[in-house]
Length: 199
Image (cartoon, rainbow, N blue to C red; front, top):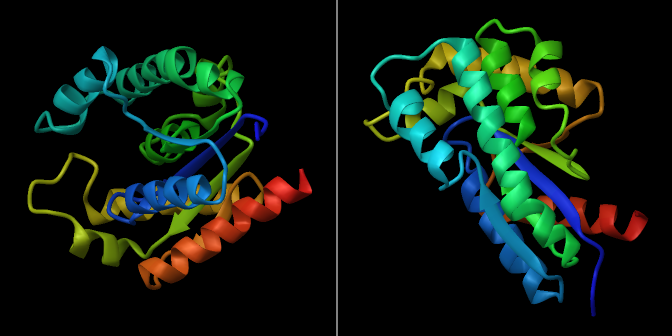
């Protein structure tokens, strides 16, 4: 049976488990009859690959403005080439990071949140955004030795503060990620199904 298209994004600090949880969610949704697909940002497109090479693993962090513009450009391409076609096919798109990553990471680095929203104003809004909340000290312990330029305790603490503001204003749904993988997955699925049934 064909379901309406839906965009869900899973957000969180580096190492919080969001990639694992986004993929588990897609598998579980497929198992119960939904046509769900996984996608991620930065993408595997040309701009996304450039970001990974020169921004995230370039040795030192580039200008906040350049970073924000590159992520926005990658997102526009992501929406046009992957997300919108999937939504038109009635699929549930689960994106591992989306707009809130730019707001949290570049916002934590000092950029104005309204400006970040403006340069992203033509991307579609997610139907539901999940924030997988894990303590910054915990994620730093989980991260591999080869870290990106953003994977340090100070950055992660500031990023979490921004994310929690979005939880407070109702833009993000907080899920406690300091539990077993199974418990977290169960709550995320329950949150999504409640949303689907209510919508």
